[in-house]
Length: 145
Image (cartoon, rainbow, N blue to C red; front, side):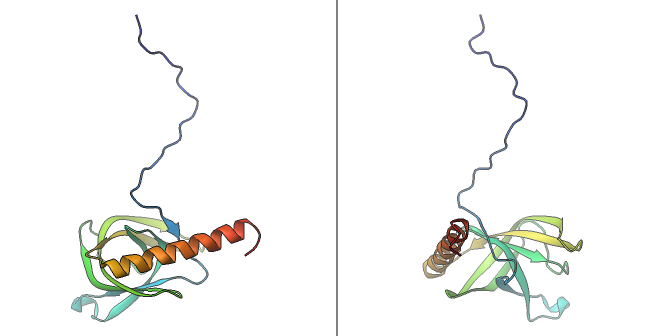
């Protein structure tokens, strides 16, 4: 005798479990992340807008395809300027990369990075910024923003 029987549903929803909640960052006034470039790319820092942020890491948008998006590669000494919160300094390790077509039909690479060796103070700043974004979003949804 069958222990359990069920109909196959017409549709399924794929749920992705994450350790941290991700917040999209503003598109109109992007949050810049400054990543040190290797000497063969001219050295110095290049600025990449964030696509989103969580307490686990950030997604960078690399429209010029400058960064090494190999999974596991690490960018050390990155600076992220969080509006009204301050600058966060951390290393970022590439966890995934995806080429995306933007609204203007240009291709950009979305590089998902994990924070590496982030200090408690920097993590607290990230948390404060996420809370701020969430408050702004909720105010907009409530028609107050």
